[in-house]
Length: 480
Image 1 (cartoon, rainbow, N blue to C red):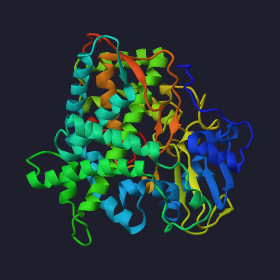
Image 2: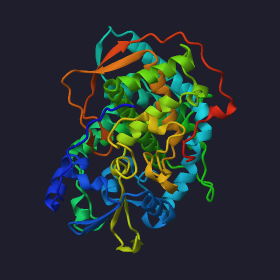
Image 3: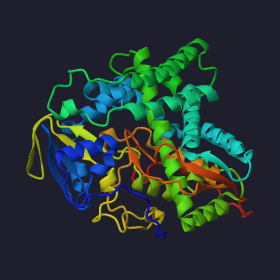
Image 4: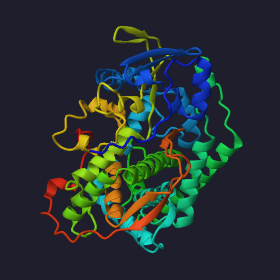
C-alpha cells in the first residue's frame, strides 16, 4: 500500500476566533478546520449571528441529508448567493417545488441508463486528446489542470449539445468558470449577520464579466441548436428540449434551459477536471500505485483503447478515482439552511441555522478511516472494510439531493484516466508546490505543471469480455 501523504492545509491546534475563521475562509475555506475537527462527530459553533452545526459521523449525515432532508434541503445562503448569478434557478441551487419539478425533468436525461448513449462520445473525445499528447515532444510541459478542464469541457459540450463546440468556445467556457471562481466571494457576511436573503449581495464587475462570457456561449449554442435541430445526434440538450413537466405539460423556458445547461456544465466539467488533475498528481507521487494501475490497464485492455464495457473490468482504476475523491472531494463543504426548528442528537437547531456535512472532514475522520491522510486506493477494492458506511463517503453528496450526474462523472473519470494512463505518465514539475485551495470547488491551485512522458503498454492479452451487466456502471454504493 502507498505510504504517500498528500498535501493539506495546516491544521490549527487551538480553536480559532471568529475573526480568524472569517479571515482564513476568505483565503481558503479548508484553513478554518483545526486538528480536532477530524476527530469530533458533532460540532456546534456560532459565527456572528449564525449558528453552525457540522455533522461529522455517518448517522448524523444520514439524519441531516436523508432522513430529515426536507428540513435541511435548502442550500446555504453563501452557496446560493455565490452561484445564482451564474446558475439562476438551476438544479444545484434551487429548492422546494422548483427543485422537485426540475429534478424530474433533468434527472432522467443524465441517469445511469443513458450512459450507454454518451460513453462512445466520451471515448472519441478522450482518444483525440491522447493523440494530441502523442504529438507533443517527449517530456513536454503541460498544465494538467487546464488540459483536464479542456478535455472534460469538450466531453460535456459534445454530450450536452451533440456536436464539437470548437477549441475557442471550449476555452472560453473553461476560462469563464475559472475566472468566476477566482472572483466569487468565499463568505456571505450579510447572511452571517442574520440579514435577509432579499437584501442584494454585491458582486464585482469581474464576476459579472465571467458570467456574461459563459452565458453568451451557452445562449448562442442553444439558439443554434434550435435553428438546426437535432440532426440525428444524441445530446442532453435535445432531451431537455423534448422534456415536459409531468403536471403541466410545459417545456423548459429558454432561461431555465440555459440554467440547467450551466449546472451540468459546471458539475460535469469543473468537478471531473479537478478530480483527474488530482489523480495525475497523486499517481506522480506514488510510484507503487501507478505501477499497479499500469499493470491492470495492460492486463485487462491488452493494448486496446477502453470502452464502456471495460469500466467494470478496471476495479483498481476505479479505486484510484474513488480514493482521489476521498482525499480531494470536488465540493468539500456541503452546507444547508434549516427551514424549521429541528434537533440533532438532542441539540436544538433553530430555524436559519447552517447544517453542514463536510466531506473534507468526514473523508479524513480518524475514527472512520485507517491512516486517513494517506493515498491508499486499496481501501476501495472489493473485500476492504472501508468505507464503513455509504454515509461516510459522500463525494457526490447523498440523499435526495445526490448528484444526478454521479454515474456520468465516474464513467468519464475512469475512461479518461484509463485511456491516457495507458500511453502516458505525468511527472510534476520540480519545485512546484501543490496545495489544495477551496473556493467553490477544490482545486490543486491555479495551475498544475507536469511533464508528459510516453509509455508503451505491455502486450498482454485482454481478459474475457464483460457481460451485459457491465454496460452501465453504477455507484459502488447503489446510488442512482
